[in-house]
Amino acid sequence: MTEQMTSGIELMFTGMGIVFLFLTMLVVAINLMSALVQRYFPDIPASRTVPGITNDIDKSVVAAITAAVHMYRKKHN
Image (cartoon, rainbow, N blue to C red; front, side):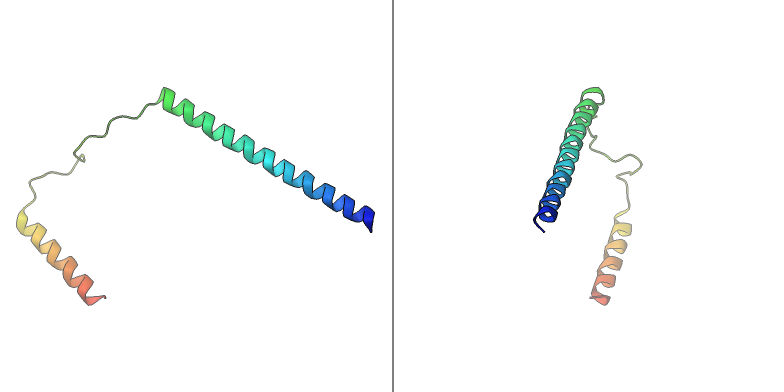
């Protein structure tokens, strides 16, 4: 019985060690890839406007959409 317990504990620590090493290597690889991406592909500053959306939307359309959303929420709550 003692030999089986020793083998079980040995196997448990071996498995936990392998998982720990794999997760450590995964964290190192992710950090390395992140550093490489940030170095060679820096962030492009975001523009203030979304392309394709114009600011000349009719106020009556906005009012109609707002009223429709309000009525839908009121009906389904």
